[in-house]
Image 1: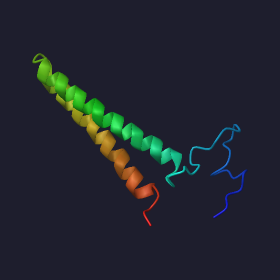
Image 2: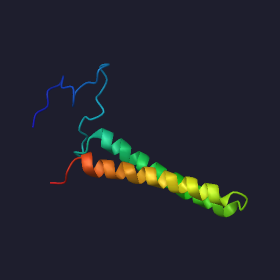
Image 3: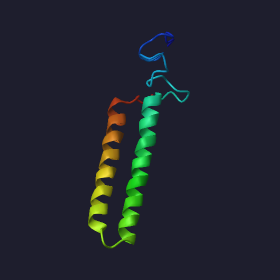
Image 4: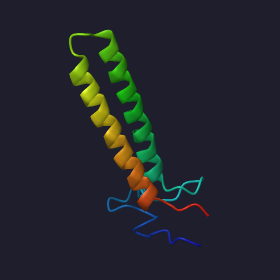
Length: 89
């Protein structure tokens, strides 16, 4: 499939910069790759918060609660990618 250089979806964004849904070399649009990187970061942050909860007994419950919320947000983003992202061939 050939994509027009000025295509609103794959070419240039409104300000003339690259559009975030432009396809990447791996075939996965850059937007979805960026979201997946953020999902990894959220999972890492959640793990670090849980480790802090174990190290600091004064505030373990709030840290565990926040870690769970961060992990849930990552899961929601993963579901978004699974439902709206590119489908495997």
